[in-house]
Length: 130
Image (tube, rainbow, N blue to C red; front, top):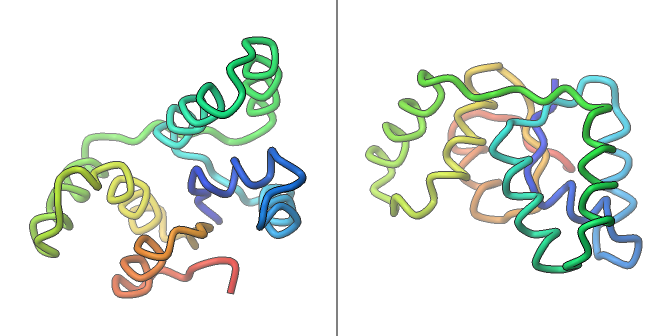
């Protein structure tokens, strides 16, 4: 399984983005999981980049094709413990929740976020793209 970070969805959305092709290849796989927190982040980014309600609605409807999974309290508590152990800021909680989701589900993590990639690798999570 592959847990997808927000930036993968954003890059897949915009054809002129730096990692568009790689992102599309990732999200077209059958084993993709999108944590619910990623959906919220994605909607926030979309609304900032393209303040067009119809566009945001269309992109939200496209997400219904994916396996969207709500994080449970175990994942959130694991994220808080990871923050505590790494001594990083609580302001990174969303990234830690996404990382914890990958750990909890024993999934790979697809992200282009350099800091999150390093954290994931340090915690034994396979990171995509290679």
